[in-house]
Length: 245
Image (cartoon, rainbow, N blue to C red):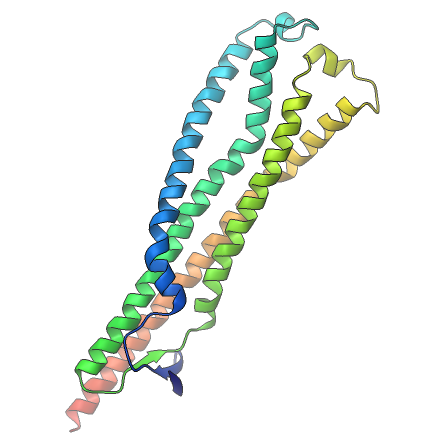
C-alpha cells in the first residue's frame, strides 16, 4: 500500500486487495466477548445489589440500640460489614460492565470501518480501476487507544476499590460502639479515615474512564463519516472518468 495523493479528507492509498487493518480484523472477533463480559458483569451486579438491599433492610430494620450496642449480635456486624464493603467496590464493578459494553460498541464501529474499506476496494476493482482508500486519519488512530485507556482506568479503579472494600470489611467488623470509642491515632480510626477518603475520590474516577471511552466512540463515528465522504468523492471520480471515455 502506498500513498499517492491527497483528498479533502486526508491522504489516499492504493490497495492491491480488499483487506482490513489489524485493528479492524481484531474487532471482528473481539466485540462479542466484550459484550458478553459486560452483560455478565451487569447481571452479577444486579444480583449483588439485591443481596446488599436485603442486608440493608435487615440491618436498618433493627432498633438503634441494638445496632449501636457494644455486644451487638454477630449477624448485625456481619450485615454492616457486607453493606459497607459492597458499597465501596460495587459501583466500580458495575461501571466496568458498562465500559466493556461500550468497548464492544467501539469494536463494532471498527468492524464497520473494515467493511467500508474492503467494500470500497471491491467496488473500484469491479469498475476496472485502481483501488484507492483513505489513509487512516488521526481520529482512526486515536479511538482504539482511548478505548484501551478508558478500560485501564476502570480496571485500576476496581482494583483499588476491592482493596479499600477489604479494608472496610476489617473496619466494620467492629461494633459501632467500638468504632465510636476508638482513641485518636488508633489503627481503627486511621483505617476508617482511609476508607472514607478513598470512597470520596473513587466516586468520580470510573466516570473519567467511561468519558474516555465515549470520546473514543465519537472519534470512531467521525472516522466513519470521513470514510463515507471519501468514498462518495471516489465514486464521483469513477463516474466522471467513465463518462469521459
